[in-house]
Length: 492
Image (cartoon, rainbow, N blue to C red; front, side, top):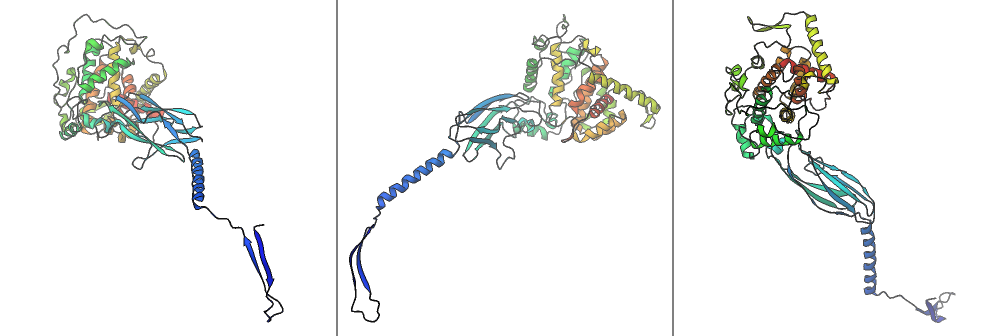
């Protein structure tokens, strides 16, 4: 329809063939492209496609990009939240992702819930950020080798990345600080800098951590001397925070604040009313200088007067000096003084009977309710004293590396089923600083047992988990727990 013939004829003058050529003139209609218009249309189409693609890309909106935790103390759980909204036209899949410098999406002290999920258009979710510094994560934070801050990457599937900053101020605490550092520190850790910690490590001197001395000294004066029971009651959480704050800042434990504490704990027996003024020194004893190499309870000071803990005596020698009769736990054993060897004078059946008796005590301790099931728990007690006692247990449980190293866990479990001699042998390789602290702690615990504030089985049950920790991948069995309690009982 777009072609028209203007003329058509043949060429008769061509004689070489009987097919005469023909010729024609035609007129055609041709479309002419307007380049300007064509370019405008092309750009409009691209814009439409781009808009469609953008509508298919997930987009999100965060109500904040910084999560501020403020001051964070050891063992304190702090939560913050952030709102994530799907502001796009398609379903949104989100997740926090790892970075090249870190295999996990968040540092070990931070938890996010939920850390991944899907939102339909218009939906929102509250992301909960929880920070908790415990014995697994406190070592680097305590010495200021790391800061309580990080930048998280929130990734949208087929979309862009969003960056969220989390930050807080970790309050350096003796709880969660490595014992290798604390045995060199003679001042409160709260005000120490990274350089101060390094100088402590270079000092080369050992001492019992100041916080341990402070706690045991308080319990010796205001629990043992007044007939209160120990390690049976949980104490008061608010008061525990106050006690730990005093320890971290180097403040004395004021008995007027602690012994007269009125917390929220219920069902406690009435506290004994002490009429005499509170004395800062135990009667008939002299203060042990905080600069001494070895700090021990005043009543036990003479027992260690000939011991030079800086020279790291053998474990057996150090532990035996805690008592005039180092084998009092199991009378089947006596000390052969003439040759310095451990000799069994009882029969195998006697030893088996002793072991069965101890096992029965441990079974009672782990199966019956506390504190009503144990008569010693019915002795007078004070909420403040209970709190300080539990702060002592919590300190050892909070160490990044336990007082008795993880490498000795299996040997200690095995020794717990044998004898005291085996228990001493298992600790022969204990580092000098750890040995110093262990001897000091056992001296205090033995005095508490002898003065009726607690029992050997109760101490063994409470401190077994605090002083020993299984290696990674090993789940303690019921038998392990019993053997560890037996191991601690042997040392007492």
